[in-house]
Length: 115
Image (cartoon, rainbow, N blue to C red; front, side, top):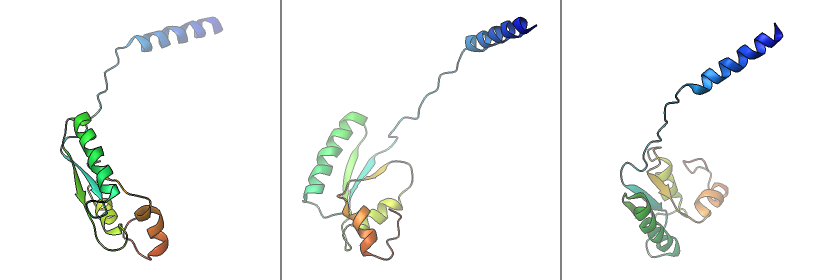
């Protein structure tokens, strides 16, 4: 009886493995232009790096990646807040030195975003 159960298990496993498996397709990304946000004024090192990165990502993804400078007071937290409030679809990215993410939470009581 034990041998029969073992043989039945092997036959069942082989039958399950023989079933055709439906292919799984990932969503295409990006589906529309991507915003690369820089929380500092144009012309700085972060802006230059963002523009070089945007050019390379545009070539790789075949979709426009544009740089938007979101400068304001408070050491980049204005731009970081706008990125945090963006739609969570992955089409808004931020490139920044560590300040708006790590240091501002120690300097300001309320940032409006969770770092």
